[in-house]
Image (cartoon, rainbow over all chains, first blue to last red; front, side):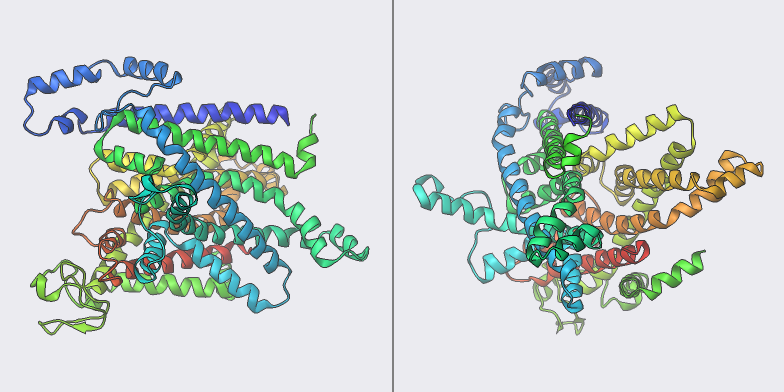
Length: 323
Length: 278
């Protein structure tokens, strides 16, 4: 177990370094000049040269990379070209919003998906099973940016219940206590609902398959034969055993969930890493793109490691292997 | 062998529904010029023809089955021509992934151990990357175009294919018929190409079908962010993006392309389910 975690940790570091290197190369090999964009079309050739020199862009690629890496390890990602603030500061503000969104939606979609999957795997009513399957296929097929838009149509414009933009209202600074919390929650509702609905579709599909895979196991028949109530058999025996592949998938699905979050953040103006990344990419804000790519890779790798540890928690066989 | 597969696909109700959905959308895309109510990019008298509700007739006597957008363009026609873009980009993007994945996976399965370790390492590494970050970078930094999106989708989507091809081919290589072929004097490359790979293709095709739906969604997503197919060309992503600004007064502009997307992805999922017989 410990050896496996150590290996995954090293692999995680390799992935982060790989993402950073790839991003760096892509940024610097791509056509388009951030200095030109910054100074506008009226800039003279001399100004462009000075600008490049000031940002260190005229030095050899490998030297730029080495310097960036040496600074990044110390948490210094350079200054944002477009906004004039440290890139690390921008990301430090953004990452909790993304982490909250992803973790909450993962938790909600897997609890919901597991319940639906367990119900489907154990019901005798084929109509219920089939319609739940159809629903989960349809939900899973919805692009996040479109479902978000549809929810805005209903909840913001028709019902006028929930706000559709940002993480807090314009009056947030004047709110205190519970009304402040309520304001935050209301702003979180639609982005979270969008990601969760899509997630439930995938989670229910996978849970149903995992629950059915253990459904014929002899230990379930034994548990029933001993007279255990049906609910206890499902929850304590069937679910426990189905959890192992499910938790593994949870880790593997993280990059996809992050992808979904990028689009959701773009739609709802949710101030997270995805939003920062999209804006920085469009503005060719090199330092911020690098910082955002690093943070994205770190979030995904950290999530994968967590999932791996979680597999040890749900499966004693993994926990005690080689210990 | 393919005949049998198709038969099985047709016997499964999911396969039938999925195939029907995909056939419908493909037919609409192919027949777009015949079925369209108007030129998808035509703007005639913007003020008089914009934001017409579905099923209304404009001042020129043209019927708009799905209404018009803010420039007075016919949504139904844009949907049809957008289908051509979405389906082509999705299919070709997945084809590139499939090709790279087949190559990497089969070489890793049949090649020398050092090559295999290297390729599998690269695959695992790629699987851990957040795909959207790469997509955004590639699409944003080069001049956006349909061809670029195809390449980018292909280059960022081959890793699961390679993993599966590797696993399936390895499983085939362990079977007695491979030993028999080797005993008969067949060379390793021949065994791999003629026997192991074709027999490993079932699950791979299931994954590829699912991947087409995924690629179409991502293409639309990139176009939605303004990094894919460029306006005024009709694509489902750009249509949803323009519908975003008119949610209040013309919800149909954004709803129609989204529903089309869902239909295609559901079709791909059902066909994939039926092929893999889950």
